[in-house]
Length: 272
Image 1 (cartoon, rainbow, N blue to C red):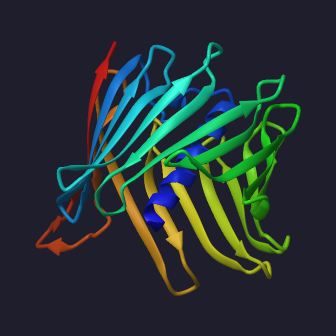
Image 2: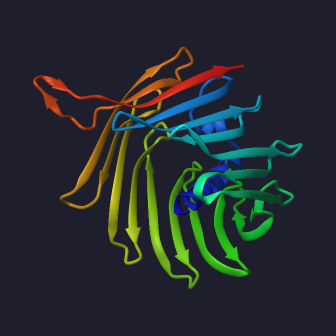
């Protein structure tokens, strides 16, 4: 159940940020060319863990996303757009032990900003979100309600070149829960993220480095002064400079003079 709610939140925020920044899904996913279909095989400890399918329209946005685990379809998302190419609503179907049918419906103001999104399960309104924007169409405030009561809200801050630099989360008593601060490199890639608790103490820090195609090759997560995780990635690319293989050399298990490298992700890409 928690995973489904987390996935729902990610999809919702991801969709709104794409539209709020006037980016297509292809641009947001750093996919080059006119991609028609993407299939992602995700591995964990050399074992196939998840399979994800994405179907794109000619405008570069997702029409359908299917997710599989252990060979079984466990969720699907079907996107619908209005005449202006904006999200109208999308359907969500979850299968298995916690089967659900859901839908998120978007409402827009005259400026084209998605000011409200309503989440339904089995045709029943569960909760809704109201959003406020600045004059550049960036989301600056998002409030989540259930049964007319506010559950939480999030505030967003941007810099002069439209990059998201701060995200603050509050509970239903308007008490600060956490803050995320982002930093970017000269090419606009997210290079560092620091997370702080309500007291302002740094809880985690994440640092990233990229290759020439703007894909992460080093991902370091600092938990505290004594604990950190570091992931190092290498890629193989197709003729459109989209990666088709991602390998993880994080483990660094020495076997003689060899360093272990594990397959992390394979991608099958079809173009129009």
